[in-house]
Length: 161
Image 1 (tube, helix red, strand yellow):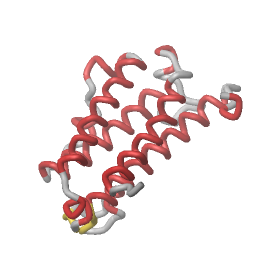
Image 2 (cartoon, helix red, strand yellow; image 1 turned 135 degrees about the horizontal axis):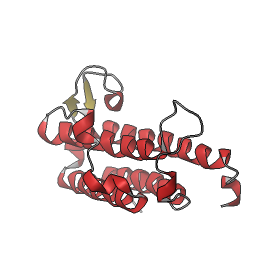
Image 3 (cartoon, helix red, strand yellow; image 1 turned 90 degrees about the horizontal axis):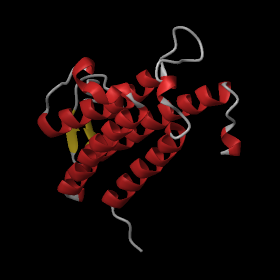
Image 4 (spheres, helix red, strand yellow; image 1 turned 180 degrees about the vertical axis):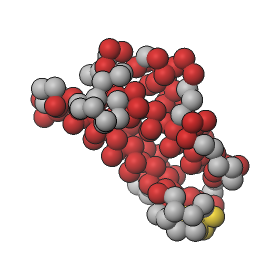
Protein backbone atom coordinates (compact mmCIF):
# COMPACT_ATOMS: atom_id res chain seq x y z
CA UNK A 1 0.00 0.00 0.00
CA UNK A 2 1.41 3.36 -1.00
CA UNK A 3 0.88 6.00 1.62
CA UNK A 4 0.75 9.56 0.44
CA UNK A 5 2.13 12.58 2.22
CA UNK A 6 -1.49 13.49 2.97
CA UNK A 7 -2.06 10.08 4.59
CA UNK A 8 1.07 10.36 6.73
CA UNK A 9 0.31 13.88 7.94
CA UNK A 10 -3.25 12.97 8.83
CA UNK A 11 -2.10 9.76 10.55
CA UNK A 12 0.42 11.70 12.65
CA UNK A 13 -2.24 14.22 13.69
CA UNK A 14 -4.72 11.41 14.44
CA UNK A 15 -2.20 9.50 16.55
CA UNK A 16 -1.39 12.45 18.78
CA UNK A 17 -5.08 13.35 19.09
CA UNK A 18 -5.83 9.79 20.18
CA UNK A 19 -3.31 10.20 23.00
CA UNK A 20 -4.72 13.61 23.92
CA UNK A 21 -8.28 12.29 23.93
CA UNK A 22 -7.22 9.47 26.25
CA UNK A 23 -5.75 11.98 28.71
CA UNK A 24 -8.80 14.24 28.40
CA UNK A 25 -11.09 11.31 29.17
CA UNK A 26 -9.46 11.10 32.60
CA UNK A 27 -10.18 14.77 33.40
CA UNK A 28 -13.30 16.52 34.65
CA UNK A 29 -14.54 20.09 34.63
CA UNK A 30 -13.32 20.38 38.23
CA UNK A 31 -9.76 19.87 36.92
CA UNK A 32 -9.77 22.80 34.49
CA UNK A 33 -8.18 25.32 36.84
CA UNK A 34 -5.82 22.81 38.45
CA UNK A 35 -2.07 22.57 37.97
CA UNK A 36 0.37 20.42 39.96
CA UNK A 37 2.08 23.45 41.50
CA UNK A 38 1.53 27.21 41.48
CA UNK A 39 2.95 28.89 38.40
CA UNK A 40 2.40 25.91 36.12
CA UNK A 41 -0.12 26.16 33.30
CA UNK A 42 -3.54 24.83 34.32
CA UNK A 43 -5.30 21.96 32.58
CA UNK A 44 -7.48 24.54 30.80
CA UNK A 45 -4.36 26.46 29.86
CA UNK A 46 -2.74 23.35 28.36
CA UNK A 47 -5.82 22.59 26.24
CA UNK A 48 -6.10 26.20 25.09
CA UNK A 49 -2.39 26.23 24.25
CA UNK A 50 -2.87 23.22 21.98
CA UNK A 51 -5.85 24.75 20.19
CA UNK A 52 -4.48 28.28 20.01
CA UNK A 53 -1.24 27.17 18.41
CA UNK A 54 -3.10 25.16 15.79
CA UNK A 55 -5.37 28.12 15.04
CA UNK A 56 -2.39 30.47 14.76
CA UNK A 57 -0.60 28.15 12.37
CA UNK A 58 -3.65 27.50 10.24
CA UNK A 59 -4.49 31.22 10.03
CA UNK A 60 -0.95 31.90 8.87
CA UNK A 61 -0.76 29.18 6.23
CA UNK A 62 -4.25 29.83 4.88
CA UNK A 63 -4.35 33.67 5.01
CA UNK A 64 -0.80 34.74 5.89
CA UNK A 65 -2.28 36.64 8.81
CA UNK A 66 -0.73 36.60 12.28
CA UNK A 67 -3.40 35.81 14.84
CA UNK A 68 -2.57 36.94 18.36
CA UNK A 69 -2.45 34.28 21.05
CA UNK A 70 -5.44 35.91 22.74
CA UNK A 71 -7.51 35.74 19.54
CA UNK A 72 -6.39 32.21 18.78
CA UNK A 73 -7.11 30.99 22.30
CA UNK A 74 -10.59 32.51 22.49
CA UNK A 75 -12.91 29.52 22.39
CA UNK A 76 -15.73 31.44 24.04
CA UNK A 77 -17.98 29.50 26.37
CA UNK A 78 -16.51 26.23 25.11
CA UNK A 79 -13.47 26.85 27.32
CA UNK A 80 -15.66 26.46 30.41
CA UNK A 81 -15.95 22.67 30.20
CA UNK A 82 -13.76 19.73 29.26
CA UNK A 83 -16.31 18.64 26.67
CA UNK A 84 -16.47 22.16 25.22
CA UNK A 85 -12.71 22.36 24.88
CA UNK A 86 -12.58 18.88 23.38
CA UNK A 87 -15.15 19.96 20.79
CA UNK A 88 -13.25 23.19 20.06
CA UNK A 89 -10.09 21.18 19.47
CA UNK A 90 -12.00 18.75 17.23
CA UNK A 91 -13.48 21.61 15.18
CA UNK A 92 -10.06 23.18 14.77
CA UNK A 93 -8.56 19.84 13.75
CA UNK A 94 -11.31 19.28 11.18
CA UNK A 95 -10.35 22.56 9.51
CA UNK A 96 -6.70 21.50 9.51
CA UNK A 97 -7.52 18.16 7.90
CA UNK A 98 -9.70 19.84 5.29
CA UNK A 99 -6.83 22.18 4.51
CA UNK A 100 -4.40 19.29 4.08
CA UNK A 101 -6.85 17.64 1.70
CA UNK A 102 -7.18 20.86 -0.30
CA UNK A 103 -3.49 20.88 -1.25
CA UNK A 104 -1.49 18.82 -3.68
CA UNK A 105 1.59 16.95 -2.48
CA UNK A 106 3.67 19.54 -4.31
CA UNK A 107 1.96 22.38 -2.44
CA UNK A 108 2.57 20.61 0.87
CA UNK A 109 6.29 20.29 0.09
CA UNK A 110 6.78 23.73 -1.46
CA UNK A 111 8.77 26.22 0.66
CA UNK A 112 6.34 28.61 2.32
CA UNK A 113 7.18 31.91 4.09
CA UNK A 114 6.81 32.02 7.86
CA UNK A 115 7.24 34.79 10.42
CA UNK A 116 10.72 34.86 11.87
CA UNK A 117 11.48 32.45 14.71
CA UNK A 118 8.21 30.48 14.59
CA UNK A 119 8.50 27.10 16.26
CA UNK A 120 6.25 25.48 13.67
CA UNK A 121 8.58 26.51 10.85
CA UNK A 122 11.66 25.25 12.72
CA UNK A 123 12.60 28.94 13.08
CA UNK A 124 13.33 29.06 9.37
CA UNK A 125 12.04 31.85 7.11
CA UNK A 126 10.79 29.30 4.54
CA UNK A 127 9.56 25.83 5.42
CA UNK A 128 7.33 23.38 3.56
CA UNK A 129 3.77 23.40 4.89
CA UNK A 130 4.10 19.66 5.58
CA UNK A 131 6.98 20.32 7.96
CA UNK A 132 5.00 22.98 9.82
CA UNK A 133 2.10 20.51 10.16
CA UNK A 134 4.49 17.89 11.56
CA UNK A 135 5.68 20.48 14.08
CA UNK A 136 2.06 21.10 15.01
CA UNK A 137 1.71 17.43 15.95
CA UNK A 138 4.98 17.59 17.88
CA UNK A 139 3.70 20.61 19.80
CA UNK A 140 0.46 18.83 20.67
CA UNK A 141 2.33 15.74 21.85
CA UNK A 142 4.51 17.85 24.11
CA UNK A 143 1.48 19.32 25.88
CA UNK A 144 -0.31 15.97 25.90
CA UNK A 145 2.73 14.60 27.73
CA UNK A 146 2.42 17.41 30.25
CA UNK A 147 -1.23 16.52 30.86
CA UNK A 148 -0.29 12.86 31.29
CA UNK A 149 2.34 13.94 33.83
CA UNK A 150 -0.25 16.07 35.62
CA UNK A 151 -2.52 13.06 35.95
CA UNK A 152 0.35 10.83 37.05
CA UNK A 153 1.32 13.34 39.75
CA UNK A 154 -2.12 12.70 41.24
CA UNK A 155 -1.61 8.95 41.17
CA UNK A 156 -3.33 8.18 37.84
CA UNK A 157 -0.59 5.96 36.40
CA UNK A 158 -0.71 6.05 32.57
CA UNK A 159 0.89 2.60 32.39
CA UNK A 160 -2.35 1.27 33.86
CA UNK A 161 -4.71 3.01 31.44
